[in-house]
Each structure stands twice: as C-alpha cells, then as structure tokens.
Length: 264
Image (tube, rainbow, N blue to C red):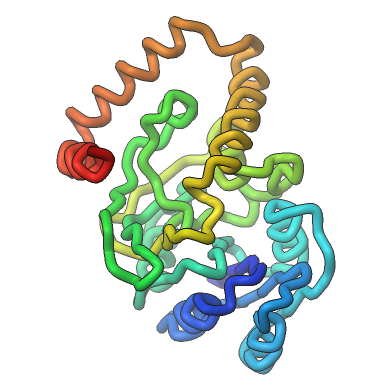
C-alpha cells in the first residue's frame, strides 16, 4: 500500500523544515511526498529545493489558493492512500504505519481519522483532539470532532468527488470530507495520536478574516446540502448537537472547560 502526502507551503519557513522532516522520518517505506509552493519569498522555496533528492515531486507554480494547490499536488500523486499536511504542522512518529494497518484490516474503510494535538508557535501542546462520530449533520452543526492532519483517505474516495473545491477559501478540507461521506465513504477511527496542528499569530485559522470566509463557505455548503438556508431551528439543532457531543465524546467536557477558562 502506497501513501501520497502533499504539503502546501507559503511563507512559513520557520516551521517548514519540521513539517518536511516529520513526513520523511516516518518508518513506513512506501511514501510519495509532494510539496507545493506557489511563490514563497521567505526562503521556503530554497529550503524545499534542498530536500529535492528526498521528495517525489516539487510543484513551483502559481495557484488559486490552498485548495487549488492541493489539487495540483494530488494530480501528480500515484499512491493508494492520500493525506495532506500544512507547512506549519507535523506528523508524529509511526503515524503512517498505524494508518496502513487500519486500511489493510478494514478493506471497506475509505477514511481513517486519528487523534492529535493542537500546539502553539513553540510546539507546546495546548489541547488533545480525539476524532469520533464524524457525520454530515455533526459537521454542519459544529459538533464534529476531527483533526485534518491526522486524517487519511483512499485515492478512489478523493477521485469520486473530484478533489477539493477551489472556490472554498476557508474549510476546503471539511468540504472534501463532507462530499466524500455524502457519497458513501466509510470512516474508521484510530485511537492513536498521529499529528500536530499548529495555531499561531500568523496562521489563517482563528483570524477574523478566516471567520468571515468560514461563514460564507459554511452557508454555501449548508444550502447546497439541504436545499435551503439556515433557520432558527437549525440554531437550536446545533445547540443540541453540541450538548450531545460534550456528554458523549471522551475528553469533550475537559476541553470545553479549558476553552472557557482561556476565554475568561
């Protein structure tokens, strides 16, 4: 079983080497690693070029955004299993071998979701994320628990939905998973920590502009899926889904308390 991993890079050189090494140091032998950079000016491209002998492909060409860059990378991929990693995130040791075992033992599985940690700019672990119960409803109502960096999927599932929506500027990863699950992709959960998701001052996630784009993309996705706009009843459903998540999801109560403490 061959893995294809794509990293999208843009002006995050200070974290990029850690990301590259986290993939290249995996103990799994069959990894095709592709790096995409549309035009960094901070030395990232020079760093990537220094890894050329260890990379399957380097894509240095302009794109229409992260989703388009990922599509460009996966268009050049030949693996059976796909995964992707931002240039400021990282895989944990042994991640690929563990994921491979799940796919081999579950031939009817299309997506594997593992656990991981949110980390800060210095690599300190802030919070653990444990994937469980991903459904289209839970995603739309803000109650889905999953970590993109610890999520892998079959090439066939990716091809079935035509890849990433290049018009999505905020949650292209979520839309891809929703599209795959809506088309019947089956999810399996791996109770192991696989990856690190870095949140820092320069990251897109958490910024005000990202929040605004997320609302636009989420409203579009919801309307397309449901054939209607969001209503007050959906706000109530979202509230109930989140309560259900806190009551049933392992570690959710602790995470919710910690998040509330940080905001206060």
